[in-house]
Amino acid sequence: MLKVISSLYANYGFVEKYIFIQITKDQEPGLFQRIESSTLSNLDEFLIPSQHLINPGASYKFQQLPLWLNLEINNLLNRELYDNYLVPKQPINFQGKIRYRLM
Image (cartoon, rainbow, N blue to C red; front, side):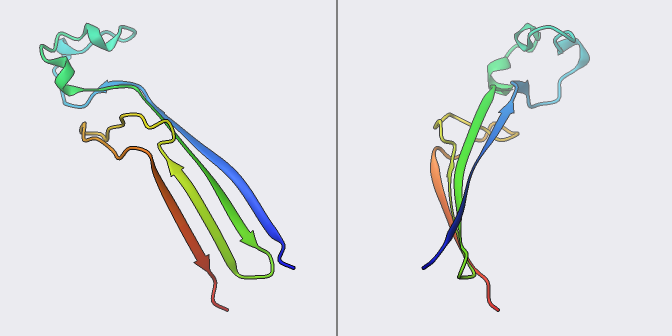
């Protein structure tokens, strides 16, 4: 009989909104002021919004076999996410992996 060892996990990521271009000192918001207080005229074009990312997954290891199975759901909340240059990231997606160890 095969014995299964399994684990569940989740990763959470948070990024506070920020301006992704270099701006002059006089356009910066104050130290504890909201970013919207910036004097940048077209702020919406250069503002990366706050982002929450949750990636849950499961991993299974068959004890009698050198075999591992992994499944992960990326962007579980299906939020609009962006990289450092305001390029959209992929929506909810699934990722699977099978690993076999040769002896």
